[in-house]
Image 1: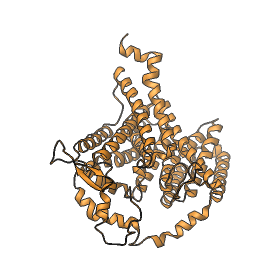
Image 2 (image 1 turned 180 degrees about the horizontal axis):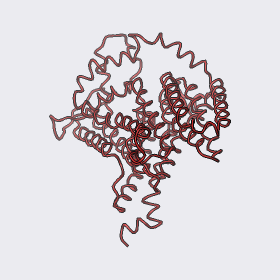
Image 3 (image 1 turned 90 degrees about the vertical axis):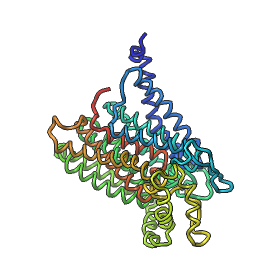
Length: 477
């Protein structure tokens, strides 16, 4: 039996087509529930399990593409950007010039293949980071190819939205019951957790990545006749997810959620739902009122006073003594010029920062804790990857966001025959929601570190891949 014929059999189709896709969907559920894979320094096992799961799915998917003689359907620029990132990252990792000794807190020189060439300052950390990024970017390739087909695109969007809703439910229950830790286990020292995330800032960024997709599915349900169950499901999910953003009390997440919701609601009201207002105005009004009531009740039950207190503290926290602003100055004034074109190496910011921190005078508690992240993703990326490597990340994420919005504009301005393949109303709604979510996390990364967290990386890379690839969407299997 020929290999191509084997792939077309029932067993071959299961192993080479359906199984890798199901494993990919399982990874989207596992990633946020495994403590958000939020801190690979403290919890490396969830990241290792996720990378293994994605690696197995990728092997099956690549094998399926090979035996069926199909090239992955991904945008050429997206493919080139990801390959450049991986090639550059692995090049500086394999040419590493040192290892970090955590006990003595100094770098130990290593013999590298090219002594004068660019290389990471720590081979072990950069290797772990590149293994993780290889799996995540490979998953983004797979998601872009899978999402080109209508049924699996909808399955992927449903999975992402439901995963976000499940984290929102967990967080609301935690707040209502006064949970002492993520899964009600006692933790010391206490930290501002929400859902499965140790940091409420990352939880807020994750929710802002997922609730726009729930909003898109909700709007799509109201466009179709007889989808009462879907309307109830996604209206309830959207209400819980929006409420959890405000109960979570991350100020950046709250501010972005308000802007994103107003913009998305305005677009839907002006275009998509306007056409169906006369025939479904009673249902739309009832669902909107019930959703607002539900959001209000959940926010009140979850402790809105904590969020109000945090906003009142903002003015007192903005000043030259703010630790984040001090860290920002250290990064911009000292680290960024020294990192140069090639950077210090993937994942090495937390190893280099203490030495630069010590150059600045101040009290012993100048930085109270050892920082793992710069709280500014783009700045940290420029320091670790250099200007050269950062260009690849900018093309991948900023280019995907811009390309997605460009395709959204094409839906409205071009003639029917010139539109991208995703010309169905539901796909147009989902594309706008995907671009909204991606824009939100990119803005959040200016003041925090969502793009350093594994589950958020998986989701953000995937949404960028879908935005890049939206012109290839169709309804085929």
